[in-house]
Image (cartoon, rainbow, N blue to C red; front, side, top):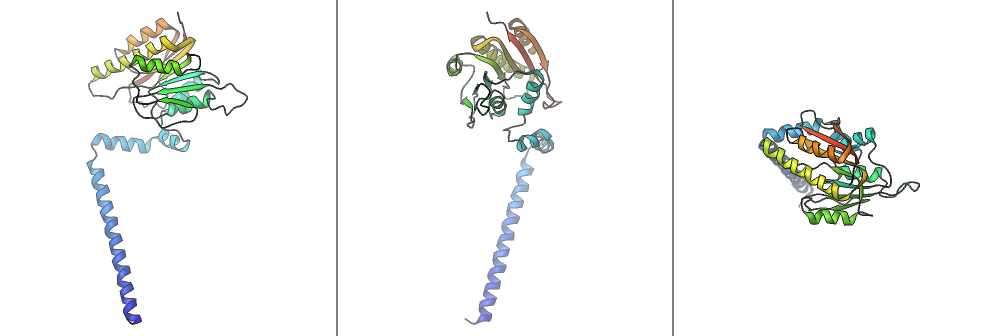
Length: 252
């Protein structure tokens, strides 16, 4: 084969390869567009909101597992519920952002050699990726007495000074049903508090504003000396999400 024939063959090979590459790119772009078009309006709104959310961006920059970390950071900065050396239970821990905050603030990894070492245990129905300084009980239903017993057994002295709960049921869209399920989860956390919270301890519990939330509040008032309702800045304005901060547990 002469040089000219080789050159023509190589040129054709390059053109064919380039053409194949363009075809593949067009194919990918077409399917990406189709996938975007398949999204429901609600999914499109959620994606658009996530892309604009400054807390989502900050969570990525600061290596938090999700934006909810900033809710706990704000609450703790204002109310000082976490301190080195205490034991903390994180209910509804997945994906683990609240546990990240708790591990850091109670010195659960022992990074601060001059401060006492704390302990963090997280529990959730879902799988949770491991986190240094935290003991996770994934795929565990807090409504089951056996799971609450495992939590108590994991605590260094069988008690915790703080219980955190960012739990919420999967919303069905039926307000009354969702409120009822949220109330059941809140009472489950209260039952755990009766079992493991030390005298003077603190409970931070998420709830959805509504009639049933008053039932939870009335029980908290019986069990704690101080009960506040909080709406952190990182909690979206349009959300009915609020938090009860109950302090100074009156353990009988």
